[in-house]
Amino acid sequence: MLNGKRKACHFHGSKLYFADGWKEKLQEIGLIQGRRWDQIEPGECISKSKRTNTYRATLKNGERVFFKRYLYFGKPFKFYLQPSETAVEVFSYQKMAEIGIPTAEPVAVGEIRRCGSLSSCCIVTRELPQTINLIEYALNEWRYLPADQRHRAATFLAAIICRDIKKMHAHDFFHIDTKWRNILIRRDEIDKSEIQGLWWIDSPRGKILSGRRHDYGMIYDLTNLTRDALSFLSRSQRLRFLHAYCGPETGRQEIRKIVREINRRLQRRPTRIYPPPETNT
Image 1 (cartoon, rainbow, N blue to C red):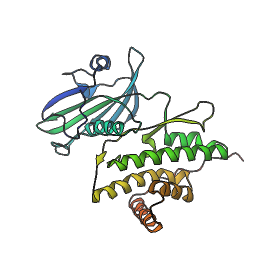
Image 2 (image 1 turned 45 degrees about the horizontal axis):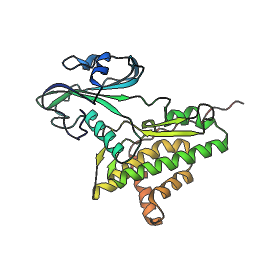
Image 3 (image 1 turned 30 degrees about the horizontal axis):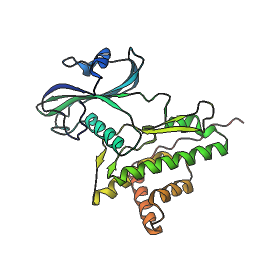
Image 4 (image 1 turned 180 degrees about the vertical axis):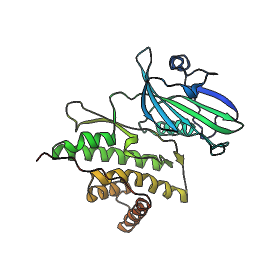
């Protein structure tokens, strides 16, 4: 059973934890208690790096799941007695679901530890069918729409994102990784400007922050949203989003302060600016 607590799942050994009804299903992809699940490669490889691998697998009943695995080399004490990234992700998904934020459903999580030190961890989530992440949508579809459809889609998405972020922060929860690639949308297959749903995914650093740390989390989330927005939205569009987030009770001086903090964070690390689409001459 998945408990969703932001702490290490266990102290020693290789263990898997399953949501109700998923233990037998996931045996099909090699996720078996006592087996070397840190070496399996189930289904189609979606992304691969030295540390993180993600696969999409289809089960016999037709359901599709994502299996994401982290491997840690040469850092035996980085997560010593600390929650793994996948344990935090389960916590984040369950916290968002509790407060009414559409998100992915985790169905299994695992850790391999040696006397408290973490060497590998994994998480399995159910696929959200017919979705695309927001950065892919913006790059490949949204910016090629007619101006009126671009405006309609952008206005609708901004309103949903603003609503969800405000709700998260009102409950002292902070996603911490609010990049556009971690926002999934489902749009109409014919009218690409018609958005049918939005979900938040991939939050391996999500946390509860209150008091003075609340403002830190707020600026962090807003800055990550702004990084990708720089390539697609005008300054006035970004300011309108910020005004909607802060609400009418927030004065101009306070909003200017937030803008300065966001810009200061953006300057610390270079932001990737996507080039405009090519036009036929």
